[in-house]
Length: 376
Ligand code: FES
Ligand SMILES: [Fe+2]
Image 1 (tube, rainbow, N blue to C red):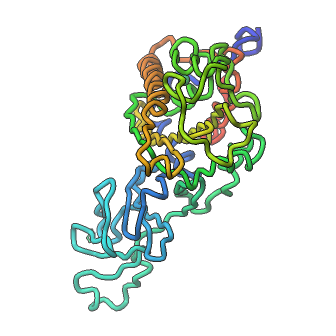
Image 2: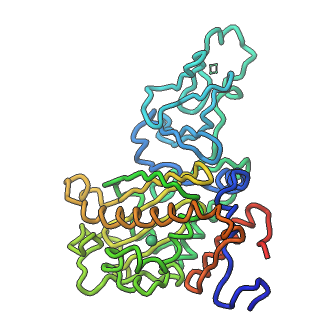
Image 3: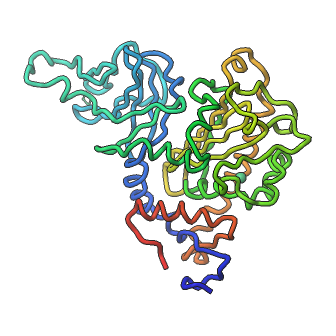
């Protein structure tokens, strides 16, 4: 027994309330999703100047677009006049400006206020000061990352999670994720707390039970050891397996930069707080989570392939089906746990077995962001 009263083999999870309490969720919104870099959209989804997407980041709606100089811009999606939500559509395209549907204040693609009824009669109103409020952006791996913090943390925090998993930055560059193209996208509406989804992704203790197709392709997963536990380790395809597909049949063209060491292997990376990256020789599966409530998370998952694979209309369905099944199996498991988080049995939480102990580091990260010590 340890000081926590648990046998040596077990460590405690977070208490049930961490997964259900709207107050705690609001703190996470403030101290995690609104404070850290948040992966918002695929850069290629903003194909041309004026193309836009709105996303929820923490408690804010964010409008992301491309200016005429092709730079990506992000703004709080709130009109400076009386606060109407500027863009209500999730996605769309404007010619050269966003016009508020309430009193027609109009902003150009850089956020500058360019027109409003009677604006010329108000020469003292600065068009930049009363322009849209800009949000920090970075592009990495072909995605737009935004940060709502007044003083954003170094982007190295994001890259650091990849380095911690793979051992360096070059290994991920081999997959040329920037230049891959979305071959499929599936959006999942998961009735579970975002942390259950992260925890699930970090361990493979469940693989043998719920992922028959995945363990067929990656036999070492049947032993339950999380591939994410060992720095630089990728799970090897079974000897009979031709590709990372639902039936182990041939995959697509291999990404040219992928090395011999990386070939026939699967690497899973958790980039805190809301991204999962899965690398296989011929494609990349990229998950972004949008936590919307303590018990609900939208997960947008992209399957990325070489451009010519997508453009030539090659059949990618067998590779999409493999991870789509894995996703559904995982999210079903998370949804099975969510209602139990408010059970009296879970008031003090559950336990992690040794092959899940590294999840404790994720819990420590959450607690630290929220400024609370681990409960004893
Ligand atoms: S609230 Fe947008 S123009 Fe008035
Ligand atoms: Fe899983």
